[in-house]
Image (cartoon, rainbow, N blue to C red; front, side):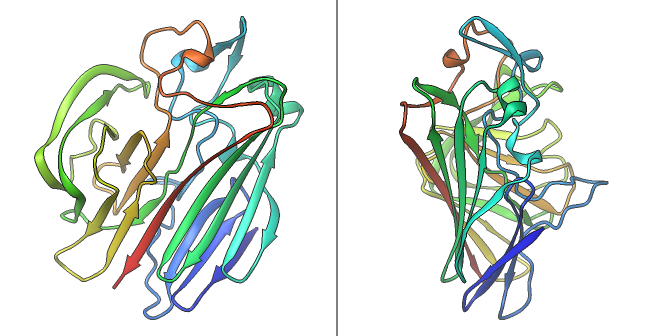
Length: 284
């Protein structure tokens, strides 16, 4: 099922499956900013990644001495979310644990995803609630794909010197760092830029990254929400780009003794909340 919210400038649709954003349209022009999905290219549009980002080594991890199996990008994106609240320009969905989730992620949780249209932007907030008597460890992230063309650019607010964290065919970090920017602000989306999979950045100074083109005046000005890692990805030569704020990161090939030791793992105390967000402004 798809629910819609709107304001003076935008209309957005959100699927209950995974609380996934499925459309962001300009009311003035009817232009669709969000990738519309194509199973022959990439079936996703804007999945929520929880409680891992990418893949854990051998799809397995250990928590308090017990082994668990976790699929790529976690469990949230392929489960139905429940409508929690709805207003004209704001909507919230929630997922909670059940018998099936406890088999692969042994925590009691609530994860709320709120979509709010604020003038010409959409703000997406993730709230993770720890329903346990002990600390809960997790990762969470966004994965929105925006329509674009080869030759469009991504531009940071500030000059950045950034390497990408190389990953292999198993979606695991290799430890090899490859240069992308050297005291520069922008890079161009080329046919082959994602041949090695996602660009994964850390230690970003900028608050925003902007998608723009020489062919038109449309822009997507993306507020990364202060995320510790940013993924930028598409299938090679595909007409979209995903801008992915991550509070977590793929495993490397080093086996961790416990999930709590995972790189960039987040934690929330018993009975407390963890909040993060991303926001995209659309101009024409």
